[in-house]
Image (cartoon, rainbow, N blue to C red; front, side, top):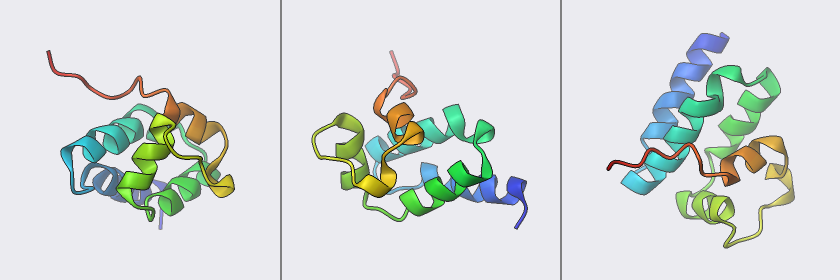
Length: 88
């Protein structure tokens, strides 16, 4: 599958998680960073999206420890939470 198709699929999966909170966090993160990812980072995110939303959100907010396989630069960027759109 080509890069463009992979990114389109990931964008859809990131924005259709099942809850508004997870959509904003995971989808917002993808929109902020996904286009610049390497193939290895895209593979990481594909694997990451297989995890449960409650776990992903807990890791991002620091309420649960991040499993070793997900530690690294992409997780560090996710933990900043500065990509979540806030309506005013």
